Image (cartoon, rainbow, N blue to C red; front, side, top):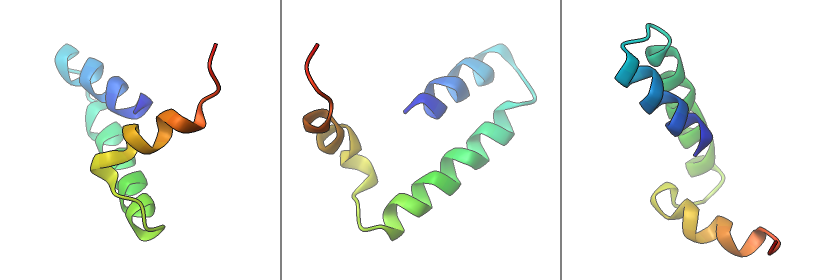
Length: 53
């Protein structure tokens, strides 16, 4: 999620680093999928793991 935020900021600013960040996102998503998690539901899966407060 943090990489996605960095990508959006870099992309909007026209930064050349946006392509590198996007590649990291794609690599991370592939690893998550390979581990058996649904990438499109990560926020739903992550929320219960974060302690309140």
